[in-house]
Every structure is written in C-alpha cells, then in structure tokens.
Amino acid sequence: MISVLVSKKLSNLLFLFKSNINHGIEYFYCVQINTKSARMVYKSIIVSMIRILCLFGCLFQLYKVTSNFLEFRVRSEVTFDSPKKIEMPAIDFAFPIATLINLTALELHSPNVLSNVCQEFKDNKGGDQQSRCAQALKSPRIMTQKLVNHLKTGDIERFTRDPTKYFTFLNIQSQFDPNLIEKNCSFKRYFNFQNIFVRISCLNGSNPIFIDTKNLLVEDFPFLMMGLTIDGLGSFALRLSPVNSQIIGNMNEFRLINLSSDKFNILRISFKRKITRMLGPPFETNCRDFNKKAALEECVNNKTLQYSHKLFRNIAVPFGRYSEQIGFSLVLSDLTKKLHSECAFKMNFNECQSIDYSLEIEKTIEEQKYGFCFITLEPVTPDLIYISLPAQNWLEFIIFVGSVLGMWFGVSMLSQMMAIMRFCETCTHPTSVHVESSGVS
Image 1 (spheres, rainbow, N blue to C red):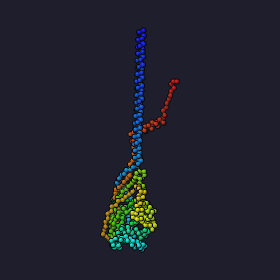
Image 2: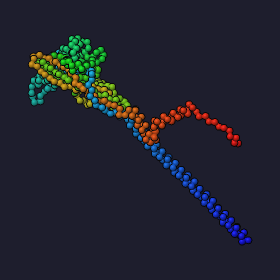
Image 3: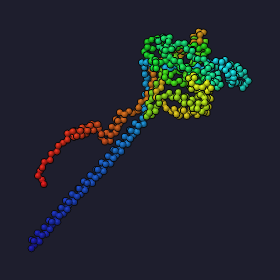
C-alpha cells in the first residue's frame, strides 16, 4: 500500500513539473514572438518616417531649384572687343533755326513776328529794347527760343535755308570717289522747335558700310573725312548713331561745337562704342527690339497732337510731314508733363540692343580768312560690350535636379540605366518555367 501511495505522489509531482515546464516554454515563446513583432512595427514606423522626411526634403529642394530657374534671372558680363570691321554710323547735325531762317522773307510774310519777338526783350529798368533785340539776334540759341513761339511748321519749312548745301565733300577711308555722296550717301532734313537737323547716312545698297580696322592702322587715312562751309554759322551740334536708327531731337544727346565762322576750322573727332545686349521675355531684363528714346518722343508727340493739336517741341520730324499751320507745344506745360509720364510708364522696357557713341573732339583753328570746317572721324578700339546671359541654363537646371534626387534617394544614372537594361532583357528574352508532375495528390 505504502509503495502504491509513494508512486502516485511521485507521478503527480512529475506531472506538475512537466506542466510547469511546458507553461514556461510557452510563455517564453509568446514573449519572444511579441517582442519581435513590436520591433518590426517600430522599425517599419521609423523607416516610413525617414522616407517621408526624405520625400519632403527632396520636394522642398526641387521646389526651390525650379522656382529659381523659372525666375529667369540674368547675369551680366563686361567684355572688351577689337572688331575686325566697324559699321559706319549715321552722322546727325543740328543747326539753330535762327542761323538758317531768312528774317527778311519772314517779316514780309508775317510783319508782326519780329516786333512780337522784340517785345519779349523788354527791359523793366527802361533799357533800349531795340538794342537788346539786336544783341539777341547775335545769339542764335537765345533768338531761336524766342522766335519759335511765333512760328508755325510752314514758316520753318519755307523760310529756312537748306543746310545740306553747306556740305562740299565726303570721303570714306581711302575711297576718294567724287560721286560717293550721290551713289551711297543720303542727306535727310528734320526739324523741331529750335533746330534744323541733317542726317548723313551711307549705305551699300540697303546694308551698312563696314570699314576694315586693320587698314586704319596701316594707312595714313582717317575713317571718314568731310567738309562744309560755315559762312554765318557760329555753331552746330553733332552726334553719332546707328545707321538704321531713328533720329532723336533731344539736344542732351548732342555735342555742341562752337566755330570761328570766318576762319578755317579743323575738327578731329574720335569715337568709342558702348554696345549693350539684353535678353527678351521671359528673362528679367524683359527687353524689346525698339529705340526707346525715339519711341518715347513719338508717343508724346502723338498724344500732344491728340489733345492740343500741336507738335511736341523736342521731336524731330521730316519736312512736309505735317500741316503748315501746326505750332509747337509750350515748354514744360502741365499737359506735356502728364503725357510724358504716361508714355514713360508705357515705354518701361529696356532695349535689347543699343549702341552708344562717346565722342572726343579736338579742335584746331588756322588763321585763314575762309569760313570752312574740315572734319575727320576715327574710331577708338576696343569696344566696351555689356552682355546679359541666363544665370542658369537648361543643362545646369538638369544637373541640379539630378544632384537633389541623388542626395535624398540615391538615384544615379548608372543604376537607372542598369535597371532599364535588365527590364529590356526580360522583355526580349522571357525566362521559361517548367513544372514537373510529382505525383502528389
């Protein structure tokens, strides 16, 4: 009996021991499984957060790179260039109206003009009005400013002498051709409220004339020579401009040259070019292919004609373009200021290409009783060139985008090309899969 009881006790203890061990093993495996699943969850969350962070960082940098590119900014370069050939510029002369107008014929046509002009020289201190008026006649600039208030366009066109008759010869480089003026050069007359303009432009057919700069260094001849008689001309103004550009009447663009009208005057004029090239839309320079100064004068003139039926004072117009009864607008009137502001706002663009000429004038007077002016024109090289270039081009933009993708996601051209090759191989040579029957039901 006792042995039976002992064996039962031992069997019960063994059963309890085995069951405890089994519970412990099951608990251990459950804890391990739960710990691994938690780690997998945490790892997937962290990986997702890193991917989202990289995605947002990449998108932000791509946005900044793209927005900077779409601003179409420019950078400027300044270069010096010694061209092999130089285009011959147009030469604009400006003569005061008072030096060219026939006052006798004007007085016969309009008897009160000169008396009205002299009234403006009235001295409040009781001075001699006639002597002041006679003194003003000796100053062409002052007389022109007083005289123009009483003139119409028809008076200027009928009673002024033709200044093109003063030019006696013109030679380009070493081409001493007496018929050069008739064959290649044209003289066109313009006028505004105070000057008669003469534009001399020489063309080879419809193309500009180009001069070889190497010949200027070898030969002892200037770029251009010309002569004009100056009997009665005390001064004139001069400027250079591109041959196909519009003439400008603003005297701030001219160089005033005083002459000795009864002597032999020699003018040695050297010019230097400043060339500006800008980029059109959509780049930030936003330039247009036009002559801004001439377009501004034309705009103000058209609006002045519309509102007051008068010409804008500064614009240079060709002879015969307008009615003979049209006058000129008042100096700095409120209407002119308003119209000028409107046109300036409308013309708020840069010129895509412009050429500005800076002049250096050396004057010599010889003691000869002969009213003549001999002019030589010579270029000074190198040219000063301002160029606007894109701050970032397409190639640089693609490089920036590729570097951003490579930094955040490790994208490289090599890996992408290899992936494409593997895909192409898979498409062209598909892998055959053979399934053998194993007899398993």
